Length: 119
Image (tube, rainbow, N blue to C red; front, side, top):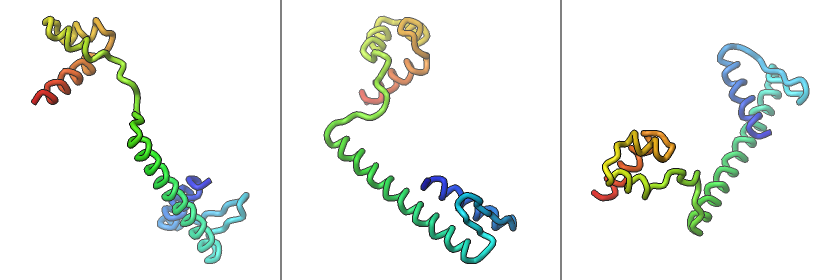
């Protein structure tokens, strides 16, 4: 609901620039009157405020989880040690990618990360 109200507010603002009025049939909202515009923008402002609060709580939760050692994101699907082993054996990036069933880009990224860590 909050996201919808913010979306309606954006539509309303864009509509004002184009001299278009918004009339919500189910919610009984009418931006053709000053009172309707005021009510609409007040509700949208509260909705945006709630959205900001939710975002702050989300960021706090993520920070607490990271402090506890929780890892976010997808697990690494390519065995990095195997990539380095095959590279040391002299295989090309294309052959390593073929051997591990991954893209050449993934192999290149893993090797580049290793080189950057070494420097």
